[in-house]
Image (cartoon, rainbow, N blue to C red; front, side, top):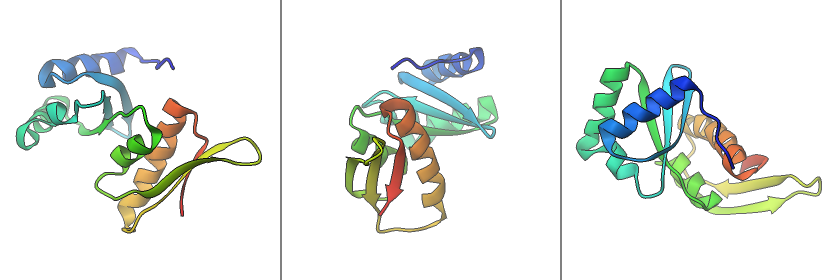
Length: 136
């Protein structure tokens, strides 16, 4: 799958990679925040010791930054998106109308869950063609 980046995203990715040493797969600018999808195994490098890299980037860019580690496995990627919330019993099912839906359960229900669920729906659709994410 190809990811289209605009000039602004490319600038953010270049700065992010030069300041952290982590490799970025994608950058999404939304509501004054920056969401960086880093390659597998790169989250720790991107965050830095005690979150130093994130703090420095937030100062330089004057924007809130979030990092999610990519995974080639949709269920593992969902777990990374939902962190620190737990993901249990996750599976992908194809409905009778041909749409793929990723179902999962979580023992903790709080306001964070709803915003993470919206983000998961967007990202799983973008990278894996999954049409929906549903909490059961």
